Image (tube, rainbow, N blue to C red; front, side, top):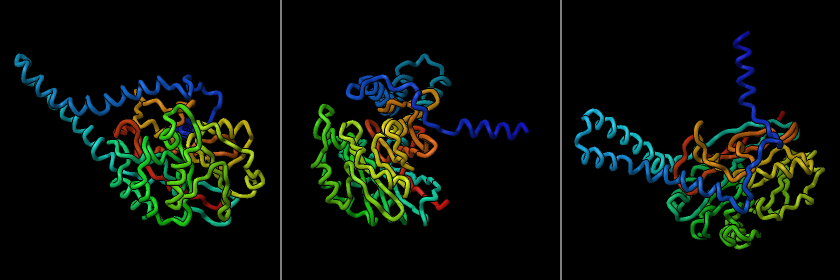
Length: 342
């Protein structure tokens, strides 16, 4: 009886349910000063300080000879282990990419569907960006997954448009390549001051045979797919959603930003699944310290959430990095979603 009680309690604690009454992120979207300050602090403590800790310790024990030999040894060993761990995070784990599997069930489909989801590539030439070599590795990995459909959830680029790197996306072998754009795709042009549709970025992406949905829909077999611009663009239009299709087919909403759940709830749009990225899982996520996420709901980080009795949100950790190469408690991921006949 006690074991069953513990199992029920554990299941309850691990069930993520969306609660719109949860305290929201206090800062305005356009003035995320707290987010920026915390991220800079995190960057300093996650890269420069840990990497320099070991050489600093060597200098420290060398110039202070009165310290006991055992204490010196502990200082040097501890600093070496910390620096080594962060060396691993920055130069090895950065290149590692997980394929995480998620399984959902629906009575709206006649046959099983498999699809791949990628978000937050952050293609560029900064040290924490996805450069040409990393992108080629990602493409090789994605091509090894036997599916017909791939969804991109935005932030193809970081702060500059490198068409010579983006063109590698044309080497993806999937039959259907569909995506939406994210805030970084627009910030390239407008530097976080004016939000508009970044047509040059969209056109560049579509040259790579990827259809970018901007308040548009598609029907593929038993799936109805609707894609929207980035939430911060203020150019969302749900009036074009075919509500009959929401009832008839397995319906998917592509939105870079997971905060779109507010609109889905307020407008009573019964999508079966929302696919989002943007938050990177927080990148650094420890019990005692978490990087803030640019979201009203700080607990929206990764995994599947029940938005209501009908709609689920799958929030990917993303494949790229922002501000730092370090990920602790999170991983660069590709999502393989298996939708099974119920």
